[in-house]
Amino acid sequence: MLTIVWDVDDVLNDLMAAWFRQCWLPAHPDCRVTYAALRENPPHAVLGIEKAEYLLSLDRFRSSDGGRRLTPNPEIQRWMREHGHRFRHMALTARPLASAGEAAEWVFRHFGNYIRCYGVAPVRLDAAAPAYDRDKADFLRWFREADYFLDDSEANVAAVSELGVKAVLFPQPWNGGSLPVEDTLKYLVTT
Image: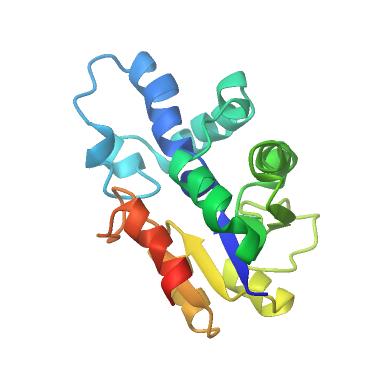
């Protein structure tokens, strides 16, 4: 059975959109930037702030009630109901370790009928913690059980492609994903 590895934030859920609507816009009512205009991730330059300020705000949101109540992607939920039984599934995140447990609970609450594995290639790792993997490609090089990989990061998709995995760019404003979500998901069952 083939294995699909799913990115969590901005693929299985709408983290950036929720953060933008629930945190950024209320705190910056004069902001004229739209979500569709967030052509970079992280979007700190587009928003005119320092990267550290953006990351602090995003990390706070991840641990907030809003972060815990993120909406699962309905198109992926529908795809899972129709096709999920044909594959094994894993979630792989690059969150900081401080919020990785909350994300795991969220994944299993919303996708647990299908996703049975959860991996972390943590970002901004504490200096005292062992650094097993630099990124998701390093994690999957070790894991060795990925046939498909979906992510919103062009860099992650390129790096994982080099492993021989069919890596799929999930469309978001900040990447070159030109296919609609429905067509992106169709690729998984037609190749």
